[in-house]
Length: 339
Ligand SMILES: *Cc1c(COP(=O)(O)O)cnc(C)c1O
Image (cartoon, rainbow, N blue to C red):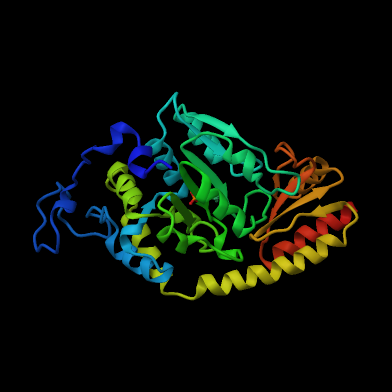
């Protein structure tokens, strides 16, 4: 197995990062004449903390990690890009992924001119372990629970992939707050494991743009060296800290899970529904007799769901997010009219 030092791109290994004014000075000054800011006070006249120390300290406590195992970014999307840029040599290295899954892995690889190796999941949306491990690449992206199918892989499957893949395994846990398990504590055991989570789904803060990456300090150091100095703005840092000391997220997740159960039962009663795939997330992949027609009719009623029919093994499917009780009732009432 290659070490992180061997896996990282040559030009990144010894790069000297841009040192921002606030990074070089540790502690609180009384007069700041170091960053060419406008000196007149407002909520935003000062640059944010480039290392988000306060936020990381609060997060580490909640997640059971150390602060040097955390990297924060402008959404997880940004972190996916930094991972590819840090480890994959354009025109030479490859990423591996298992479709149908989240579209960003492929897009980011394409932008960076990195080869994309697709190893499709089977019809039950399980990852074929042997076939996946037979591929050579720098990063294996696993979305767990998976978007758009909603299912979570068996824990043993993921562990098997982490233990045997000769590269970095990124486990994207964007929906982990709704799921049965997280692998975050495994970063202490596996140096090649990277966990990504986000404030965009369960936390209800998609507009803030805040993504979390958890990994061993060596990988975190590389990402931190690469990132733009002020990639997480001060408003986002402040609001995220506030949200961490509130019980709002847990209460809302409980409500969403309750609604999810009711929605599933109601959908099951409908004649136009052929199958509801197992979900460990806050959405369902649903197979209809005629998905395109259902999609169009819902859109006419100004009700938006996501058509996934173009994805492999997803013929005639729509992805439906669990909404508020009122929103779900409206969806069900429109669907009933079509039955
Ligand atoms: C929504 C989502 C993300 C995340 O997003 P950000 O908003 O950029 O943090 C990442 N991965 C998956 C699988 C998602 O569905």
